[in-house]
Length: 175
Image (cartoon, rainbow, N blue to C red; front, top):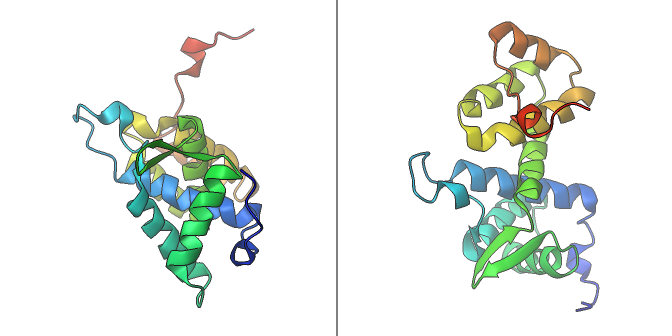
């Protein structure tokens, strides 16, 4: 479906789309049910459409004061679903990323965008490191921080013995 270009979305370049999706992905993971929930495997992967629009509206209010938040949030959700294809309506009124890896990637970028020091980065790591649900997100976040703080975060994590190492070696033996 080819949608006409919406002038309200002109400011939503790749950078801003990544930021709005990062906020939603991170919040979805934070608000997922507790570890002992039966729904843990699906936790945070499906987002209620109204909840998602509220996340977009909060981002718009903070980043683009003066825009008609509800209207632009609706246009943005539709564009991310139909044009960009990163979100899909997986059940009526419930949206998700096309794959969990996309959600982890965007949540990781949210963490990277939110920190300006190794101490702040460690705060995120400490908050989520014990939860295996966050493992890949933390690995991606720390890897993406390389441009911001090349060795500080990893050094501090190693000093504290807090490196979120994925289970990949067990799944993918070295060549």
